[in-house]
Length: 144
View 1 (cartoon, rainbow, N blue to C red):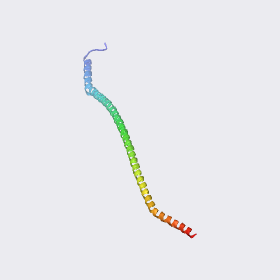
View 2 (cartoon, rainbow, N blue to C red):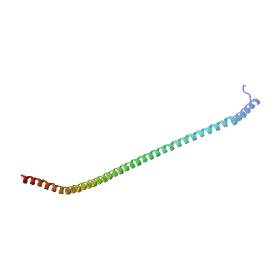
View 3 (tube, one colour):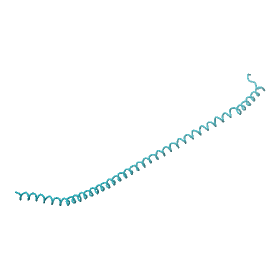
């Protein structure tokens, strides 16, 4: 028979079992624990990355909402400013027209006053000139 069960066979099996236990205790178990720990760490990193991506998407959506609100508020403020500017421009134009009308009225009154004064002053001169002309004309007729 090829295989005989003697003491060396049992010693080799015992030697193999001890070697396997020692190998498992020194190399295989620590390596398995390290691999499992690394796999847990990688899984945690993936979960953290997914959570961070979700937070980033939420923050991007929030930022987009804030930007849209800011744009709408800016447009509203710009429209209000344009309306105020137009109102102010109309008020300034109205005041300028009133001031110009008052200035024109004052100038016309001054011209009328000066014209009346000039006419009053010329009345005496015109009368004297008329007398002088009449006197010359009459004096020239009496000489003929």
